[in-house]
Image (cartoon, rainbow, N blue to C red; front, side, top):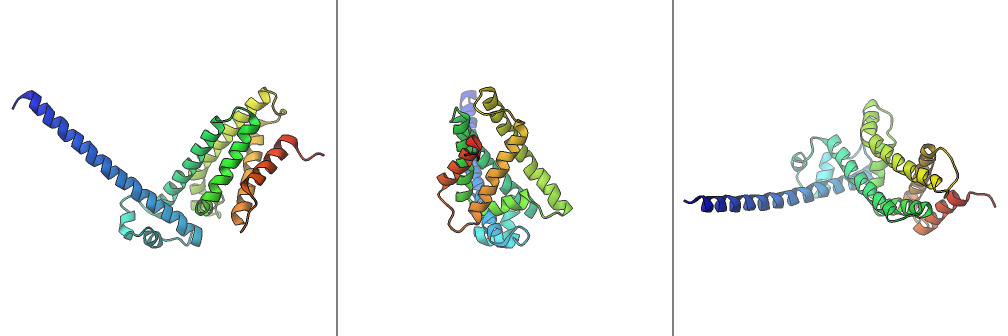
Length: 221
């Protein structure tokens, strides 16, 4: 057998292996996503502490043992589900911010994106709240620091840079940008909580306008 033919056959086998592996990866990614979405729905209905692996498996339409092919245990599933969802939110925020050039435009985009995300992903809200505001046990506090700390600080740092730039450009007055970033984030979070707990929240744009106008113009007449 010639070297050319040997190399050709080896390349064909590699191509087939890559195609097969890619298909397996697609199936695996789809299954992991289905399990994580099921986890969010169960947690939304029952709460963090009451959601079991059996209920999540039933919700996903798979055997309980299948979950353990992808996640070590319940905590691993919860943490990776949170990481996936919060990464999607932060990616959306980054895109929204880059699409605007003024501070007011960026602020509106941040508010609109965050409200819209939680309006569309209400199942995630309960998981977010459970990890963002842990009940107080040592294990829950460690989970909070591990899962929420880095993502929250990244969001604070990004908004701090935006505020600093806006101050340098004369778009807004001078203030401590890091503390102002926390103030804005928690204010938006408060409106998110209100909207998610309301049966009939007002139109999203009403809240976007209310927050933006208050930040840009204050409460003075």
